[in-house]
Length: 227
Image 1 (tube, rainbow, N blue to C red):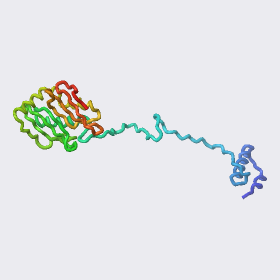
Image 2 (cartoon, rainbow, N blue to C red):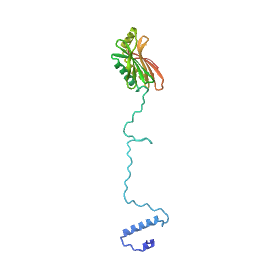
Image 3 (tube, helix red, strand yellow):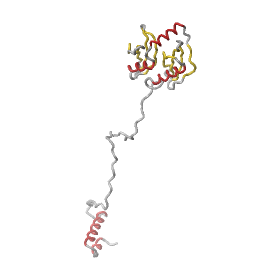
Image 4 (spheres, one colour):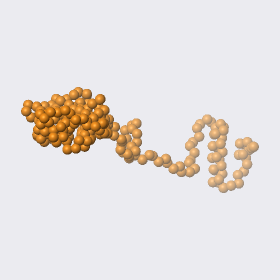
């Protein structure tokens, strides 16, 4: 291999433009092999254009650390209360199942039992006879057969009178009562008498597990007591 001094003495038979390029290349080689003065070499000119890396598309403002929105709505994260769905839906399902099991009847009482696993429902037939049923919470499945209460003539007459005076049905009553406690759930609802009038009495458990008692007029739906 020729030394640097020998390379300088060799005549270059080429154009002036090519000779200048060779000198530059030789200088760069000397610097990289440590023959220069120790200064950093000047940056070499790019031989080809490099395509810039495309930045990720931004569809909207992002919070640092927030995962990118996939465009699909999040699944609801609400929880259900013991015994079924939030609100009057589970109560309605149980009431309808009981009314279907005893045709031509009217619901007069519904109560959550066994830590919310069952609804105990009382319905009154057209002749005033009371029937009691157990309905599975959540599914609305009637468990077993309706049990007929041993009511006398006076009890049957009382049931018929209250059913006639009640212009507000059980579901309307439940909705009005729960509207007084938006975060609550009815655990008991009864059609009964109070100071000579027919009323719906409801027990509601709120989100803090506090029981609230609310009474409404079964004739016009007015709130009589609440707290």
